[in-house]
Amino acid sequence: MGPHRSAPHSDLTPDDEARALGISSDGATLTTYNYPGQAIRWNIAQIGATLHDPVARASLCSGFLDGRGLVYAAEARTVRVGGQGEADMPQAGHAAPPAGEPVRRALSVAEEAGRLDAVRRYDILDTPPDGSFDRVAALAARLFEVPVASVTIVDEDRIWFKAVHGLEGVSEIGREPGLCGSAVLSDETLVIPDTLIDPVACDNALVTGPMAVRFYAAAPIITSDGYRLGTVNILDTKPRLITEEDTATLADLAAIVLDEMEMRLSALNALRTEQERRIEQEEARQRAEQDKASIAAFAAALQRTLLPPALPVVPGLELACHYATASPQDVGGDFYDVFPLDGKRWAFFLGDVCGKGPEAAALTSLTRYTLRAAALIDPDPDVVLTSLNTALLLDAAVGSRFCTAVFGTLEPHEQGGFTVTVATGGHPPAYHLRGQGTVEAVQPKGGMLIGAIAGAHFASHSIHLAPGEGLLLYTDGLTEARLADGQMIGDEGLTGFLAARTAPVSAAAIIEDTIALIDATPHGAGDDVALLALSVPLADAAVDGFTAAATAHTIAPAGEMPESRP
Image 1 (spheres, rainbow, N blue to C red):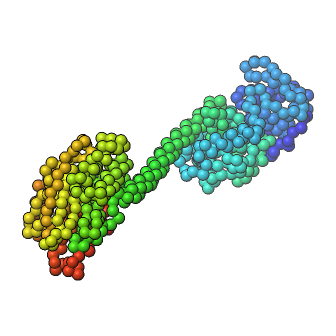
Image 2 (cartoon, rainbow, N blue to C red):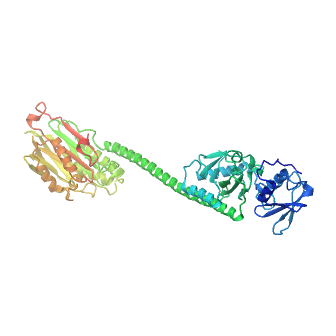
Image 3 (cartoon, helix red, strand yellow):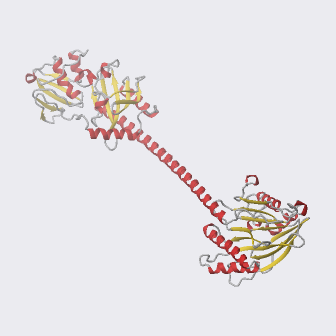
């Protein structure tokens, strides 16, 4: 007799056990039947065993009944039921599976690592109960009429229960060999009719513990790439046999579990993809916000270089201004400035270049500095605008761009106030506010676009800006703002608005009222807006009887409410 394990204690009589295990004898040979229908015929004389020797029965039956391929014998011949022929069995001391039985060997390190990676891929360990898996366990228990059925996943050092029927309070057990831990070693279904005579399962805690499992069968849950994640198990407290059809049914339940896991994985992957997409969108939004803020900061910094940092103090004159771009991300094309010509005279201008952005900023810079330089050479408004027209036409970088502008000079008048000489180049008229609702447009005839054609003609006009009077210059963003009825404010609307003002003519008040007019429109100004107001205070409002040094200088994005402006 080859090496063998002592047979565990069984409460079945030898005859009962023989019938349960499918053992028969004709006196000369011992025939044992394993599932699915293999017969192994042993020569009793050679192995020195009888049907009634429990140790011999354990040695003979354990190999093919536990599905492990462990057979202990001296010399034997195997015969398949159905007359398919004979095959040599191993010599004493060797272990090998009977013909047709699955080989269950320990997985290599690489195979186990790949299997565990597959388990992790499905992200199912330690997840809450799931009705679909619970129904599979309950269905298995009902179909096979067993008290306990489960769906388990075999982890690195534990067997985790995804679903269990008939066993309360158990979520995982150690990864001991014999039951689930052995079932994942082969693609075939593991069937152990009696665990007490299985040389490995007999030591499993589910067999030796309070559950006293006597029958166990498990079908592995196999992925499409061949990894065995876990098992669908059925357990009973008494020995039993199952048919080939039962084994196929158990394998089908394992396939259903895999289908559920695949659908769950697809849903998880779709959710992860959606979450990743949302994260990417949020990151893109944040980057866009950062870029937007950076662009706005850059545009604001560039814009500041194109405008005077503050209006100067002009003795006897009040100055106020307002500047708003249509978008904080764009550099506006409007510009204005007030600067001294000599000890008594001052110059001012306001205009609008074609377009927006960097190109418009470059044109604005060229225009602003050309006007200042030309005025210092010859302050005559006609000559200054002509010089600007020539400079724009000569600069190849300007291309077909052009601008409009109002340029004027201020010189103290002998009767108080200032003589204002104004020339325009394609720009909307300035408005002379004379008080008491009197408003006059100041627009010399013949002013043409600046930088459009060579030899452009410009004309100038002079007025007396007396104490108590004011002058308003603006860009077309003001008159093109639309009212609630959809109509633009226009020149007529602006004239009516200025004429309706009853407050004293003050540069600061003019600017504040005009801003309020823009803010009252449904959508604010749709274009850049530049405002410049000049006023001569009355004698009793002058500082030291001579100067009004108060100036207001506001720069804000279009559409911003007055109270939020600096």
